[in-house]
Every structure is written in C-alpha cells, then in structure tokens.
Amino acid sequence: MKYTVVLEKGRESGYVAYVPVLRGCVSQGRTKAEALKNIREAMEIYIEALLKDQLPIPTETGKELVEVVVHAR
Image 1 (cartoon, rainbow, N blue to C red):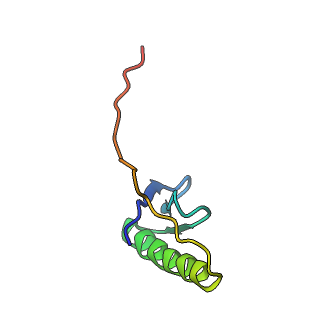
Image 2: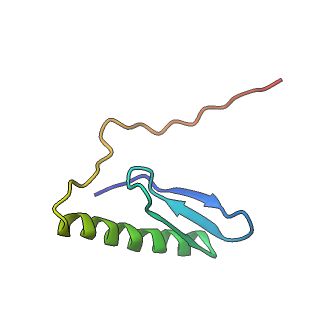
C-alpha cells in the first residue's frame, strides 16, 4: 500500500511525520530519515490494528498532490 506522508521541520528540533489519511498516525525523529523510518513503523502498527479489529483500511483513491504558489501583496 502507498500513502502520502507529510514531513515537517519540528518546532524546536528534528522532524515530524504524519499520514493524513490515517488519522492520528504521527511520529517524529531527529533526522528526516529517522522520522520516515518511525512513521513507517507507526503505519504498519496502525494498519495491523485495523485488520485485527476487522475495520476498513483507508486508501488514497482520487487524491492528487499539487503545490500552489501564492503571491501576496
């Protein structure tokens, strides 16, 4: 399965990663690589819990990621 992961610089240090379609699935790390490793583990645990509880697995169908530049005056 493929999911969009948002990776942001932490407020004080490190990086925060989250998966918008998997509500509440958030992790962090000192480096980008560590944050991505940690979010991958969190995603696996999240999906395994859904499977165990026989709940539907969210998908990202019909979603397009687009960057928009805005010029403010």
